[in-house]
Image (cartoon, rainbow, N blue to C red; front, top):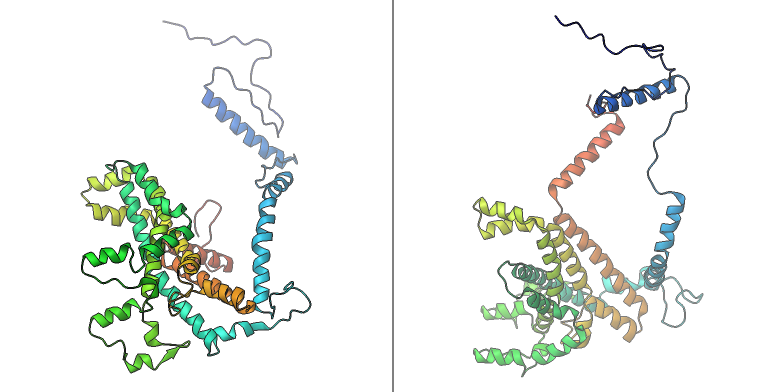
Length: 432
């Protein structure tokens, strides 16, 4: 029969350790205790010591606060100061000056902030919006032309850019680098140079009319034809466009008859639309291409394993994941099309019959040619309001509805919590 192990011998001073005073966070752990036990004991000792220190009047240690320290904030402002100065001098100050010019009688001589320049309020806006006359007729004509321009250019350039991006992103396509460069090349070429080339292509004896003649179509004089394409289509269907319906011809809005409003873009504007779509699609193609390459390959492979077709994968997988890029492309296209100027200046000067006149070109014409600086600035700010309104509307239409509902629910819960009428959250994370 074996005897029990008496255990380690206890020498003088052995036995239970004397108690430590409150507030001490250290605890000795025998070396034979596992590391996890040591860590637990040390943690418990630290917690107990902190609690004891609080009870005994000891000094409580605060966790470091986040945020930017004073010196770091100063360094950040020093880094961004050059950019702020440049934006202030070349963006903010000109905008403020143009806004003042739009509500003053400045004649283009001297400083617009001199004592001889008087405030006239909305007098520069009234001939464009409320007073019947040539100024209102020209402005409404430019708005109609630009609206048709936006209506055709934005969807066409977006669809073409997305199609090209899908094409060059294909796995089986050979020479991807060449095609990406070829499609993007028009975007980096001078718009003035391309406009001059298109003047030759769409001339009466140009390439376009020569190709149309081979299929038996007599091409128009593109940049000398003011007829609207909707009127031409109605004429092809048998409608007498020389004697339009009285309900449309006798009622005017903004100095233009309803028949003129529904004329569609002119033949000359159609050539400009073709030019702009061709030159801008390459830039937006790169944006779509970058977004397509960010889509995980596993997502598409999983959808393919589930038995979905190519169109179903594009509609339910690819297109939803491209929504942020689609919003960016549509926003940039919308802003760019409402500001079209250089192609109009080089190719048509607003003709024929003012059917390619745009607000940007009309603002330039009013200011630098007719010396009506206040009216030109007023046109620019009306155009600015239109662009902002269209961008906000587009953002509302393309918003993520699930995210919007979640944010609305969060705002309602926060409002209810502030008023005391809604559920509150206790310290343990539950609701009561």
